[in-house]
Image (tube, rainbow, N blue to C red; front, side, top):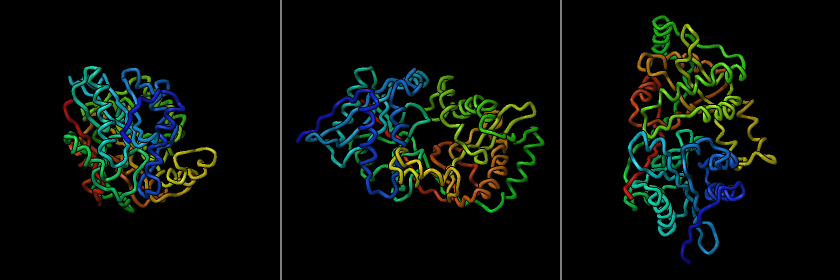
Length: 376
C-alpha cells in the first residue's frame, strides 16, 4: 500500500496520538527515554507554548494501510530567520520506520509546507527554540538517553544522507565520574575569581526565593550567554515566565548554583537534575494513573547519575574562571546526594568555552548528535 501523509490538527486528542506514536516506536528499546506525553503535547499546542507568538508549525503523520508509520513537525521560527537572514523551515519531533517511501513522504510534506511559506532551506531536527530537543543521534546508540535529548535508531541519519542532507552543526555529550573532591586547580581558580571580581555563591533557601529573586535574571543570563550560539532563539518575557513556572519549582536546591556579584546581580548559573531516565522508561511517559510512583526515587531518594542541564555565564565574565566557582559548590553537593556520574547533555562542538570547562575532569565522549540541512 502507498503511504498517505495527513496534517494533524492542533488539538490535545490528535497530538496525544502524535506523541504516543513516538513512544510506541521504541517499545522494548533499552536506551530510549520517553518524554512525558503531556509535556510534548503542550509544546506542540499553540495555547500551551509561548513560542507560537513568533513561530508557525504543522504536524504530519504518515500512514500505510491505515496504520501510523511515521510523524514529523514542520516549524518556522521567524525570529531566528530574521536574525540569520535565512528562510529556514525546521523539522523536529521526527520518527519513522526504516522505509524510504515513508521518510520521503514525511519530508516532502515538510518541504512543500515550507516552500508555500517562502522557505528555501530545511534544517533539523530542531524544535521551536533551544528549550526543545535538538540534534539527531549519530553516535552512542547503545547509551541510555536523557529526558532532555533525542534518541533515534541508527538508520535515521542514513536516510538524511540519502536525501542529500548535510551536516550543519554537531553536539557532543560526555559522561564523567563525580570526583570525590573538588580538583585543586578549581579550588585555586575559584578563590582567585571570588577575590578579583567580588563574586560569591548565593545561598538560596527555598524554591520560592529562587523563582522570585533570581528566576527572571537567570533566564536573562541564559539569553546573553547563548545569544550567538547556533540557531539560538532569544527567550521572550512570556517564555521566561512560562519556564519559571514550569521548571524552577521542581529543581532540588542542592542541584543549582547561582553566582552573584557584590550587588547581588546574577552573573552565572549551573542547573542540574537527578537523572529521570529510568523513571521515565518505567512510566512509559505517563504520570497517571500510577506512573508518578517511579519519580519518587529521583526526586526524594538517590540515583547514580546527575544530568547537567546547562551552565550559563554572563559574557562579561566568560573565560575568567567563574565556572570553577560553580564546580567548587556543586561537586560537594553531588557527593552528598550520592551521584556517581554526570551526563553533560548536548554541547555544541564549536563552543570552545563550554568544552574547556571539562578539561580538568575525567570524561568520556559517549554521544554525538547532528543537525542536517539542505536547500529546497
